[in-house]
Length: 151
Figure 1 (cartoon, rainbow, N blue to C red):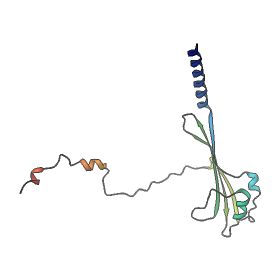
Figure 2: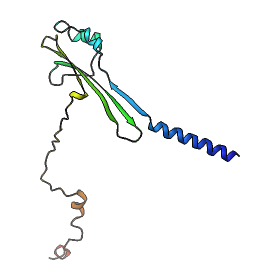
Figure 3: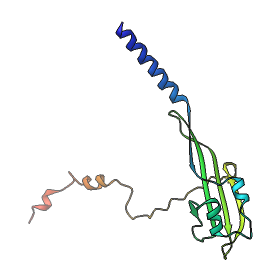
């Protein structure tokens, strides 16, 4: 009778684990301010400091020039062993002029996104694409010892 209870509990536990693996898992990364928060910012009046006070400091800002704040978030859905899928991505860009005053507020979503091909820049070498070990052991057995011991 005890073996029957154990098998029943193990089967129930396996079923719970199997069902839990089929449930979608959602993960939210990052932060983008809501439209209500953005309504509190006035274009042409607010500055970098007031934007940081009202909606918080951004995760990133302009890289080459400090002309914008970027707030980025994405929502990812995962099902068990399947590849995670990005179901929502938002970017809020708040742009500033040279004096640090807000000039524009833009919101981009996943539908606005474009696939950007990254170019891989690798420094070329004058060495052929032959593996190192092949070069290292390539001459083993190809030595002519008669030349080594001749006078």
